[in-house]
Image (cartoon, helix red, strand yellow):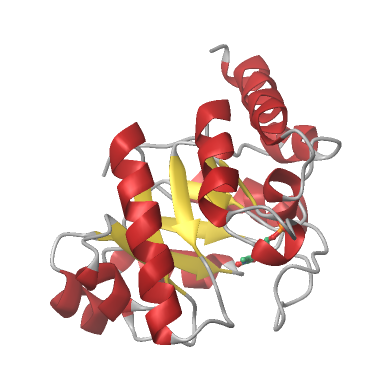
Length: 209
Ligand code: 3NM
């Protein structure tokens, strides 16, 4: 898969009155290089409409497009990949359906990360690093201790997620993350482009970029 650094996930509840595509385009223009459609409330038809719009946007800007949970939607719009949680379709079954598309897996302990890597995940999520209100059934924060473990051991790309803000991202980067994911801090920002740029500036400080 094409590597990435700043992963922006949709969260329409954080930008009332602003269009989904406009918000995600701002994130891309600020430097987000992978976008995920995550929407637990919409009907399948509504999801399809949103996925089509984001597919068009991400093609235009040549950034990666991932659909959360819904393999059928990902296939229907020819997304670049899917993202699955621990309770979703097992990776090996999902692989049969999506072929060589990207599969990302959420992990919350190193054992889940090892399994995802062994089973052929393309990347994993490592979180929630900090407390977050953006996910309903969220587990307790895994803290930067889990980021350190993943950095030491996991060879596929991993992205840190969960409660990551401009004010605490330094801790995550210091623990060894080189890819950052956020919902509320990005899409809920009054200056989405500026927020993304600042995330990338911080990453450059740690990675000498
Ligand atoms: N997955 P925010 S945490 C969607 O740990 C999601 O797997 C998580 O939102 C995980 O940046 C999370 O607003 C929510 O905290 C991230």
